[in-house]
Image 1 (cartoon, chains in turn cyan, green):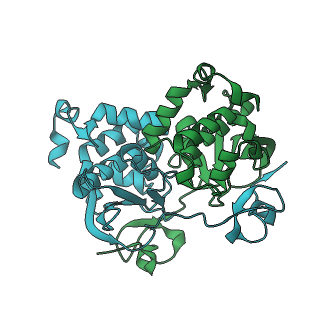
Image 2 (tube, chains in turn blue, red; image 1 turned 45 degrees about the horizontal axis):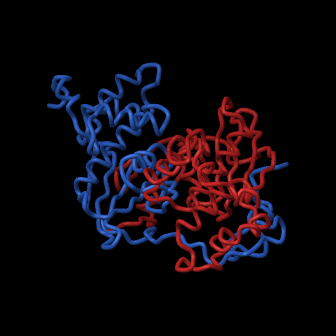
Image 3 (cartoon, helix red, strand yellow; image 1 turned 30 degrees about the vertical axis):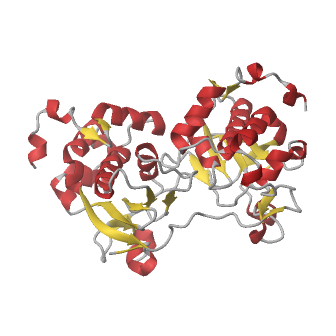
Length: 200
Length: 200
């Protein structure tokens, strides 16, 4: 609980993901639209994973939820969805792995519920046992910033799947819409086979 | 083909997604790691969709491939994976839809293979009928920038699925690893049920 007693001046000298705390928070707001608690917590996760893997190692990332965490990776590492260095698993677990893209060894960092028992506002927010009304954003953010790695755990891992670059395979022209699509999908593209998300 | 005759000076006065061409290209390199042709083409797609939907309309986005296009959306609109305003369908079609998040009406913009017949380098790159060796990056980028919307098509659409915010549902504590996970996944989390991507 030592961190909770730190004077604010020390907090604001914090470096996170290679930048001062205020720049870290600004970068989150600029990309994500607002300073979401999940991105701040996620930023500390990335910070720890970066330290463990080493900044000079070319790393890929896997996140285990679509919520918030993909943006922490995209802001604070070179890995993005579009360049294929970040993979997103729709598991809704607040965990990420940063790993050496050649050796496939790295570190998984996760939000540790047991450790969060010492930070009841963070635990209450994550488990949704405290309502938003009873937990103002700035109070929650302050606790996340004071807790930092105290609510996280990490472990060395070897990545055994999801590390390959997604390949397009052969490209065909859809007989339905005339657009390019992967030949592996069958005679027509997904939309023309009725899976489209749109109507005209 | 008129655009191909434009003097370079005019090209560099181009505004794309609300910024001058050089800033547009720098923003791509900064986020994606390099100026990928798919991101530049995708940037022109976003530019058109933004114009059609209107900048004052709060919009969500759907992209139909994991490759490149998600980053064009994330750089040039407020929509990201982590804030949930961008959905990514793994269809490998070079198309995106930007739509009014309340009315669910918007515009789908796609790479039009037929129109690209007038721009053989772009068509050859996309269909992979010209090797990278025979098509230097700067030559391809120049053709994409000269073509702009000439290789794209668009259509007004109504979005009928994939527009809902992904909800977490009830959160449980996994009896295997002790981490938080969605109760809807069963007795244990995905990793403890054997779907993990890592070994210790």
